[in-house]
Length: 95
View (cartoon, one colour):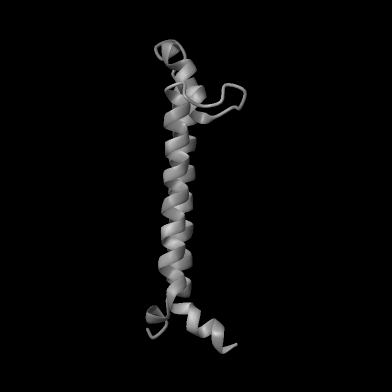
């Protein structure tokens, strides 16, 4: 049990870094798929946005909704990582 308390101070920065890395990976994959550099056999939000950008004036929702989904996913992962940081940070427990 004492090993857990020795590792505990190092966990919050690692969790925040992991959350940022996951969000960055999602954005990176969406960007590559938008440019057409992703796997065309795998559906991706970036691929949906890239293939529907020609129809932006007629069907704006085909681009807007996947963009909002990317935004909310990355924001949610970031907020979960920050929340776990707040829950596990021993410096915040002394309030």
